[in-house]
Amino acid sequence: MRTTQSPMVIATMSILTVILISCADSEPTIPLPDDEHAAMTQPFDYTDYTKLLSIHVDEKGMVDYATLQKNRTPLESFIRGMGALSEETYAGWIEADQIAFWINAYNAITLKAIIDNYPIKKGGLIKRSLYPANSIPKSTASGKRTRSP
Image (cartoon, rainbow, N blue to C red; front, side, top):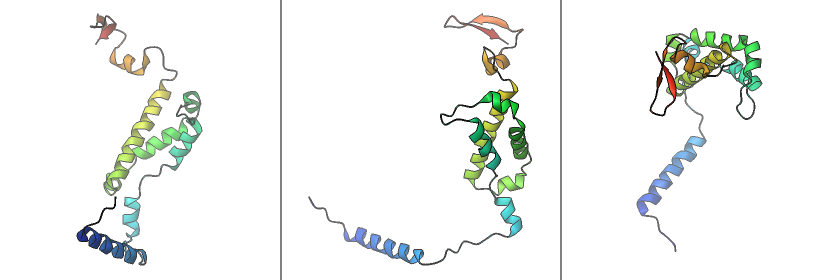
């Protein structure tokens, strides 16, 4: 079965095609910022962090925490660099760069928390921080005993 396009759709597609062809032949007219503004709006440099991850994370996404713990300086330097970022620079970024910054900050700080406490003992890092050793045990609805702060 053959369908026909309305004259309005054909006209709109023709106009868009002409516009796209004319844009392809012209140079972009994106204004270039001055040097001071360019430095302020550059996204954060993740080169060292990417290198660190390529060394300590395998193709399945598994982290070699023991090796990372022994070679923690690059991770700590990366986190310090993130902490030294100025508010003005951050404000000059587009939203996608700001979100990427916070995701990478969270992941890097999480890696540091793990290697600071590695190897994680039975009960885990979170359980130890929620339930101090001197807390009072109590039963839950499932019958498992937990500790009350």
